[in-house]
Length: 149
Image (cartoon, rainbow, N blue to C red):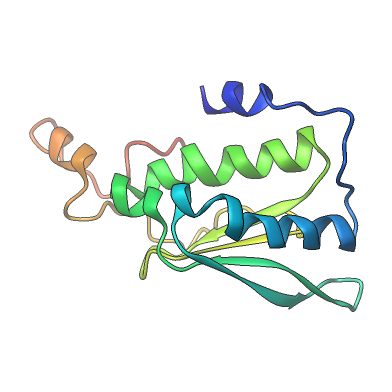
């Protein structure tokens, strides 16, 4: 469903390109246009593999989606992966998203290729996860049932 919604966005003509200027424009627009969805965010510089400093990293201080869903699996399956896939594959504008499940923040880096999930990542449900509580009577689980891994 999320992919369907994202595919409804126009893909041509494409105003922004996969270059420093395009990614820095996206970095500047994200904190202006998306606080209602993800919460307060700020732009930072990062070292692009080309050896330049790009100002296209957006740090979401405390993600509203993660805070509201209280579910690591929903964060990954409904936000991180579809967003990375849509912008990178459909629009040709790479973006990597790195949620921090410890403090609820997320780093979104325009111009950086998405990174897979770390095998060391702790995907155990939060104690207050609604899906965990729903499934608790059926069978005990340590990994989030929302993730298809």
